[in-house]
Length: 384
Image (cartoon, rainbow, N blue to C red; front, side):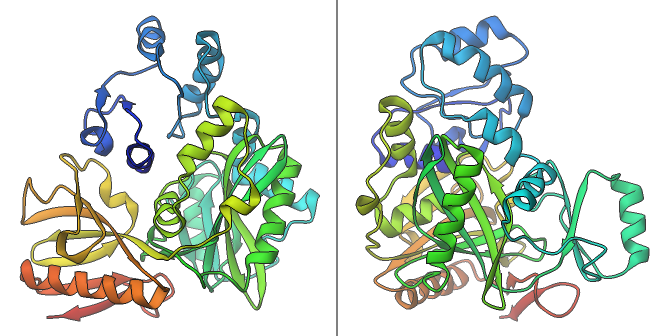
C-alpha cells in the first residue's frame, strides 16, 4: 500500500501485481493484475514487459528469486539486492553478521535470563513474536514452533527506525523515526519530526553505515533499534522497501523513498547527503480500526484483506485518511497521517482528529494498546 501511495505522490502511473484478489492496495493502483507470477511463468513474463521499474514489495523468497532471474532478461530495472535480502530475511543470519561485525544486539538467551522475546527467524515485523516470562512456557513454545527462532533479552525503551540507501556498501542515511507498537508488537504508529530521535541520530547513522558496508548493500535497507540505558541495540534489518516509515518520512521531509529508489535503480544516482537532511515538519502515521462502536489504534495487520480503500484529504481533520469507510461506516479500517510544525503540534492535530472521529461515529470505547503496559491486555482503555 505504501509503495502505491508514494508512487502516486511521485506522479507515476502504477500497476499492482498480486495473486491475492483482495490485496488492499488494489483499489489505489491505476491498474491491478491479479495473477500468480509462479503459476504461469510465460504469462508472467508477458505481463512484466513495458514497465520502467519493478519494485518488489513482498517477502516471498521464491518469487524474489524468480524476479531476480527473469526481470533482467526484459531489460527492466528491478529494485532488489537479493544477496543482501538473503541475509536480512533471516534473523539468525543477521545476528551472526552482527556478532562478527561487533554490532550491538540484545543479549541472547539463556545468558540473559527472563523475560525474553521470541521471534521466528524468517519472518519480519510482529508475526509470531511473543514475550516469554518463564522456562516452562518457553519450552512449550519451542515444542510448538520448532527451533527456527531467535530468543533474546526483552528490552523496554523507545524504538527507532532508519532507512539507508546505498551503492555497493556506500550509504546515505535518511530520517530517524520513532516506532510505537500495539499489544501484539505490531507497529501501530510512526512519528517523524525535528526532534524525533535526535539523541540517537549520530550513533544510529554510524550503525547504518557500518551495516550497509558489511552487507555491501545496493538499494534500500531498513534498520530497527531499541534504546535502553543510552545504548542502541539492533533488533532487525530488512533489505527491501519498508512499510509505514516511508510515508511518515515523506510527510515530514518531502523525501519520497520510492523516487530515490527509481533514481538509483534507473539512473545509478544516490541522493546527495545535503538534499536528504532538512526536516520540514512533524508527521504522525497510524492505523485505526472501528467496529462495534469501538475505536482502536492497532498495528498494520488490520489492513490485511481490506478492500475498497480510498484516499481522502482532510477527512475528520487528518492530513490523509486512507480507508474503506465508504463501504461500511459501521466497520472500517484506516491509515491516517497528521502533520504539524513540531511533534507537539502534530499530536494536537492527531488528538483533535481522533476526538472528531469519536464524536461522529458515536464511539463508546477507545483503546490504544501498548506492549510495555503492566497487565495482560496492554490497553490504555477509555470508556466513553
